[in-house]
Length: 344
Image (tube, rainbow, N blue to C red; front, side):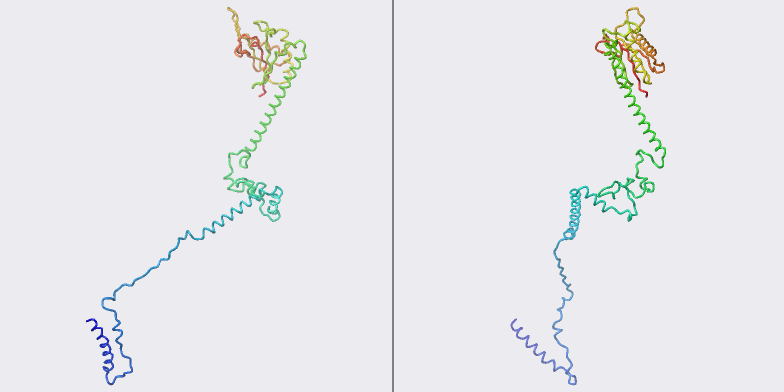
């Protein structure tokens, strides 16, 4: 049946084509084009006119913007800057001092062409030279003309200020007082050294006191120069249990008076005893004995032209300050101390 249908189809088409000219009216112009049957044959079949068009979207593969070439430019700029910096450091380290100075002088602006005058500590003083902006010398204008400098300048620093002239005079007075005090202390030390040398020399030259020169000792303490006249087994300044000076000890006190008379410092006299107590029934003690011996020494000094106004303190301490603490009965614990006090 399929083969019969296929053989009849061309015959029907040829018959339809031949009958078409014959259907035209007799009076009609046959030269006008006639409608063709082909468009009808090519019409879209029924039911297929509402099909949606198919859109094909092509996505081209590739990488994001972060993998572009912009980072190479930034890296090249950074490497160039680092190379220039290290090259500058190498040149500064390899060049000599006179060459660096010449380069600094060459790059320093000329006085005739420069409007701003920089300080000696500013960055114009040399390559990489200069200080912080809060340094008054680092700015072209004086600090009093710059509001920022008035806020940044530390107020805790010493020295005179424009708004507080009292600081200027006060600091100057303090400096002068400190210098005067230091000079006075040096002068006193020199006077003490001279007194010690002269007294030792006189004791060494005196035949009467040659044997007791070792009984005089000199000690520097915070109050001044202390001169100790110490007893020993065969030498005593006072009679046993009394405050009466023996002739040889009185001559020794006279030499001390001659030495200290050359100074105007105040004097302090102190009496010491050993720990041997008085006998039973005696109302005296080492306290009263030490004070009496100190007063007897003061009177001997005053008789040798030492004015009474120079004595600042007379005291007796008994055996509370022994020379030999391991042996309270040591004769050296009996002594008289004459201290030349500091003027301050």
